[in-house]
Image 1 (cartoon, rainbow, N blue to C red):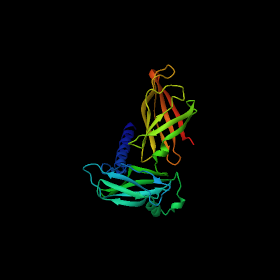
Image 2: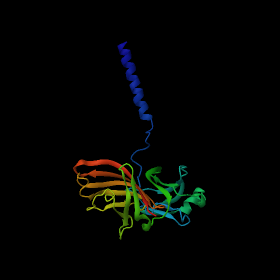
Image 3: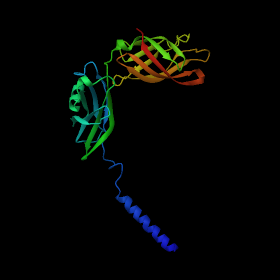
Image 4: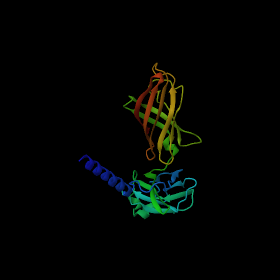
Length: 267
């Protein structure tokens, strides 16, 4: 009986191994896909106030030493995933420009039905070695207002119920870089002296996402040492407002957590 069981087990194992050899790889054929990169996005929004002429522009590159037959740039609207071909590229690197009116026409969308907050998706389909693959490189293109540095700076009202902070601050655009914004007044709200800083916010010109490198803005915060801010957020180009998440640190005590702030323009 033991010999029969052992023999049966061996037969089953052979069948399993043979079956595994015949199963297709769920990840598809490996080692043949060329992965392109989608970079240098600017601008990365469609201007809701000029959809006839608004456009996005970006660069497509492929890894050095690789070859592709073509890359198709496809577009979709909202969460429909139509993936309509917008352009085909065969030489690289390639700079691609897509008009909002063109993508709307190809997707069968009337321009007057498109509104702020709508999102277009741009993806890349790569044909290489006779096989088409969809790249992880994609671009989400929001419909928003065009960037104006005068709307991104000025007198603002800062509010953070989490940090128990409220008051007026001043935002100033850098003279040579309108997407670089200086923040002054956050600690004056708290009755502190801002002898350091200023805090700097960088607005991504393609996405309007905001990043804030760590910066100490006051050397003494209630006797706990310097107070520092870092974080990220998003800039709303139509209202000129910011929603920020700041990681606040106090001297040797380190991070005090992440707190939500809203910056809205004063009338």
